Image 1 (cartoon, each protein chain N blue to C red):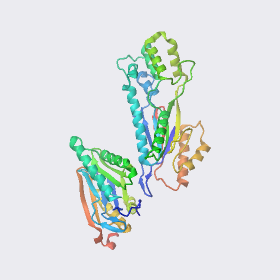
Image 2: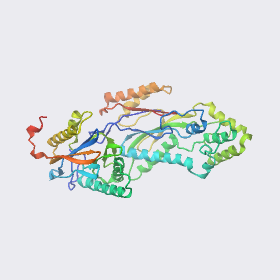
Image 3: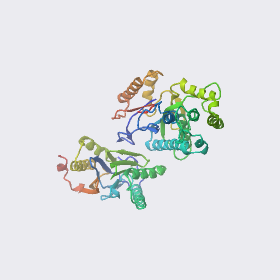
Image 4: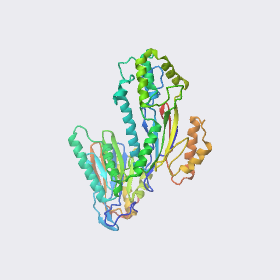
Length: 288
Length: 218
């Protein structure tokens, strides 16, 4: 997902600030920027690969409101991460990954199952959940005294909905989740079918995530989109995106497309933002 | 012209504050006129309010709102430092506190445009805080009715690596030009500098006494 934003902030004719970052990353499992898709160290890195992915929010509108909205969502994401490590007892018991006493060599069949069964479930929030959460908050605030006067674009990598032969459907009910984990830890080597399905689910797609982009406006509408824009300059940009967007753009082409959009704003939009736009790319290896 | 049009009973400042960061510190310059519509209420207002030994806040917008909230902030900071004496509060925390207070009251039609600036363990930093709860960090801000006039001079003549003396001179120039053109700015000019050692007032001048022909030929 490529996101671009300008960097100016103003409340009247004066530009109050020229380097505001309007694309905020609220969940970042790769804070150092390192790519941790390292298959040698499966025990540690698989958890980051399959659980938390980068979620970024680009906001247009009132800065104060957008800061509060993004802050609230960020807090909820962090809370969910925290709970998934420490939280409810049920998760804790089966959480072989985080338990240092568990032998984490990939050769050990038993623990591998325990880890693998967790790999298919992500207890952390993904971009889709955050988008729905945000929509709820905006809608509630709209019907109260203080509304959020911001429109946001929320983007992130979301786990593909798995559709396999039998029980291993992507996200099933909580009780099925627990049953599987019990089977995984107690069944051990007898449950070969389970293992192979799990492994298959990892191998059939090298990339078990797909990019999702959500458009939320200040009135609480939510749409999943391929491309979109917010703000007073959005009308200029949307037609350019309509014309030139295609699903098969490479990253360079996408960045050039975004630069073209901002070039159009410089040509025709009455408000001149002196700084060049900030363009961020979100994918499996983080946000740059 | 003021951004918000005032109710006639409010005392508004509609003035001009500027500040900018230089290497090793922050320079801020303010005027001192408080007006009630077209009536000049005071020409000796203190628009720079100290929050702690190394943090200052400026006033722009409504005089009552600004002075109340900054004094409340000062009390909170004092309580924090007394309770947790080992750690000094940072400018980011102070500005966050004020921004959250103001955001909570954003329906109350306050008028506050302040800059919280100081030198803490992370170096010099300046935050612009608004009555809507906007809080932005930056290097240069100009707030108030005469802000556009001051910005013209500031942006043009500012350069990288200014020394303290040059920065003070620039601040004075900017405020002088703003008070020359803006009806709601005037009175005295005051310049403060914040460095590692704390804040100090470095300049004060009665703008009514300057000779207009002399001062603009620099």
